[in-house]
Length: 146
Image 1 (cartoon, rainbow, N blue to C red):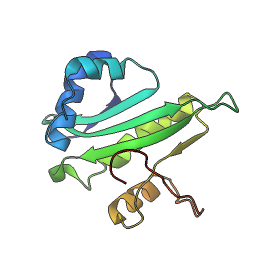
Image 2 (image 1 turned 45 degrees about the vertical axis):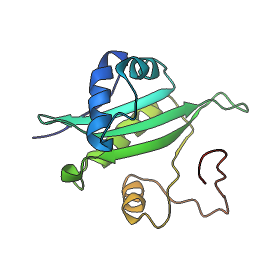
Image 3 (image 1 turned 90 degrees about the vertical axis):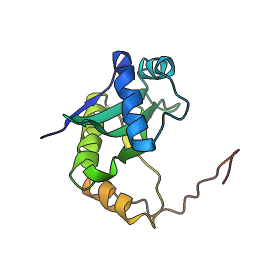
């Protein structure tokens, strides 16, 4: 059974909630109205991989306007696949769907932050065409736990 991978719209709020619940274990208190509002904003991207068994993975990304040019960047914020469907190309397929959308939107760059020790993530992003930044950038976190 092959997966269907697509970007969701506001009419897909129930599917979004089911995908998040299946991968994260709950909806984190997010209801369908909140998801509908999230999905109605063109700068928010939620892509789901689903098959006959229902949603098996999701990806969240945000398009960010630039002040210095008329092109956006996209932050791939989160990606997850249910444990029993990992290592079957779903995450790679969702990233490919995101990158296709980015090309259609003339996005200048797509980026994601991960820990270099996260070997699975490093392999996934490299397999999807990403390359690690060799710079000296440091991520600072304000509020919450660092």
